[in-house]
Length: 60
Image (cartoon, rainbow, N blue to C red; front, side, top):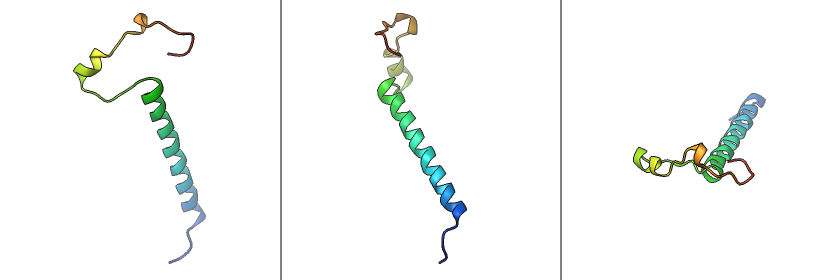
């Protein structure tokens, strides 16, 4: 076994960064915006059009 090249280490670091960013964005969608995985009937039961929402001064 030889030493790991610099290119492979850079690719590994870039992959880890992409994984971290996608995890952060997925958490933001799930916990901040309430996006969830559900069937169409369950999803439509919880859907409120943007015009019907009351904004509390922040982003919604």
